[in-house]
Image 1 (tube, rainbow, N blue to C red):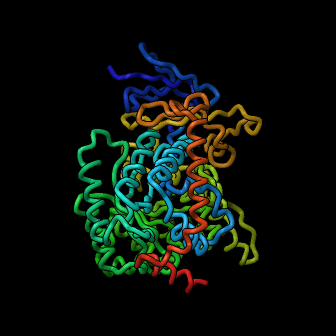
Image 2: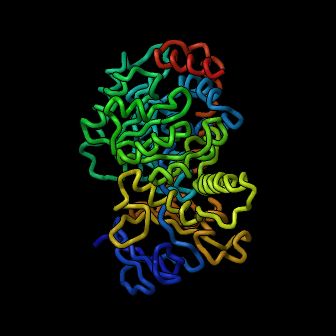
Image 3: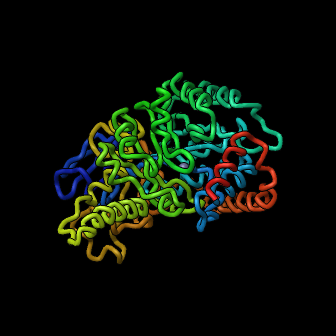
Length: 463
Ligand SMILES: [Zn+2]
């Protein structure tokens, strides 16, 4: 019989009773009820805690974990110049592994159990292997979206765009098509529109659709404000697409995404900082889309979902309120709720991954991606009567006490399981030092790829 775990007496989000037990068997939630009696189970005491589904991060470049904080004061233009055309040129497979492994652990530590990893640091097949290994070793649920972006190289491993497409096919064939676990699945990350010819985009989309893989892309920023329209005109817009940012996309374009069955990811912290525009939460809802949230990059911002929920919710409220204030009146009520923000960060994210039947909420038959949130800190005295208010507006990553993914406990009583943190810290420091040293000379190498040249042109146009 599969291993059974009984989570006792927590405030279970989604349960009908004030407190409930959750029975996990193998990878699945078997039952949720006020009182479950079961033999041969491991008991986890959740009294005084919130029991919730894990957060789903729908857009993150985990490879940037090793350059944490370098972009703290950078605009998007500076980010592209210094990271996409700079730091990226010096990443070794070791740097990608360390980044993906630690970044995924950081996510788990903060209660994120599923992540869409937008991986555009594919300098060689070894980089791809390192990225997937990092995700696998951390034990996180993930979509690994392989990118095609041709990073400026002195001696490129990939001869041309076609060889990058072939490498994606090889990744699918060798690593994912026969995988026995569905914890990590593959997708495709498109290169920015307008910065590559439409034929290249068409070819990248074709690789994904050849194998039925999901597609994600940056949308409606920088030099591609009308990217949705361009995709639609090219006949490529589809339900398999997760559009990220969309700040410059028109309301009509957002409706086009909704009509196509596509999804959107909002990354509030980077969008607010980097000059991408106002997060589209309100406009997405008006267009019939279900907002989801992503962390994007810890090279500039925080790595947890609490910060993103708070920033997005209060920004969206400010936009609604301002509309009323501009008429000389005071808002008498607030439309967007903490329940909305919680759904965006959980079940909507699961839907964006095409996994709403599997994760994103707690219910019998769903996978056991479960987070226990402690409320014993002074900032919970007294605890809010509404657990969703606690999660969205009061809680901190340090409140995340226990995390289970696919029935496996990855964090227990506040400690990540099976991780040698001091040794990992040393590897992170070594990686960070290498990248910082290499960055000093990287700027001189940025003109050697067509995409880099176009990117550099876009940056100089913007400045
Ligand atoms: Zn991004």
